[in-house]
Amino acid sequence: FLLVTIFLAQGKVVDAYNTSSSILSLLGETVPETEAVTLETVGSLIPETLNMYAEVYGDDWLGRKMEDNTLINILKFYSVMSTAAYFCKPSHMVAYFVCKMVQLSLRNGVCQQTPLALLLFTSIVIRFDNAAFVGRIAKNAMVLSERFDLSDEMAELRLHFHMGAGHLESFQFGASNLRKGFGSGLTSGNANTAFYCAIQGTFYSIISAEKELNLLLQEIDYYLHLLKTYKSEMTRYYMLCYRETVSILIDKGDATGIEAKLCHDDVSDPGNKLLEVFYFHEVFRNYWLGYPERSNHYVKKYEELIEPRYFEAYIIKFYKALNILAMLKKKRNGAKS
Image (cartoon, rainbow, N blue to C red; front, side, top):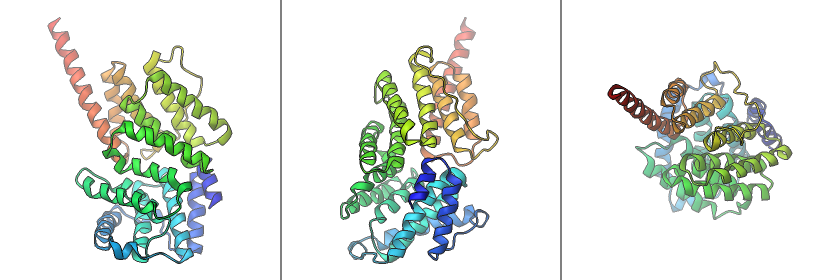
């Protein structure tokens, strides 16, 4: 398990995925090839899992404790495998593994891995039409976590709460709570999750103007300084992208910019998650710099991506509308002059 988390921290997501798959096979699980898991398969698996939760959740299930250590380890490896799959597999593969986690727990009782399984589930299935129900699942998971000594996992629980149902809370609250997750993650020795908390918290802070930009830039530089020690290449990419956005918004990078080259991997791959982050920030930056045409260019680039994150896609739609309004206003003012 430690080896897989090291692979994730180093950005070696394919190695993390393959190692998890091998171990799950040794534990008796059948891990299907990517081609064998279709959108239709996952499309039926998600409502099946939601219905199973609605039927099973209650005092009887909460009173059943999962005693089988093999099952508990299976849940752990499905968890890290789903994280690796997010970066190297189609999005529906992530949903497949998380549904497997949740159904295993619903059938066999609760354990210390159950709250995380439920929160991972909420982060991938939440939609506006099911937000109230999925929000209850997330809050129930946080309450359930109090039954176990999960102080070392609190950073991960906070992270996935705010990646799912946390979108229903204020982004300012999310940014603040994720800073706590960063601190608790480092304290517990879970640096990889700590920096994922930093990523999500910084994202919330940028889009909600939660913190004054110069202070936010200092915070990002602090994270980048720590990353010289912790060597998380995936986190470093995100932080450099966020830093560039904040620097551009402060002074177009004239005095606050740094020389650090971003690598977006294969720009021809529409499933490239790093490219998704880059396009999102180009939309955001250019709108606030007063370049709606350029911002809208990157809106179109973002819309060409395969299955972008659900709530981020709605933020992009919001900026698309703002761009259209700005361009219409510019056209009308030009006609008047």
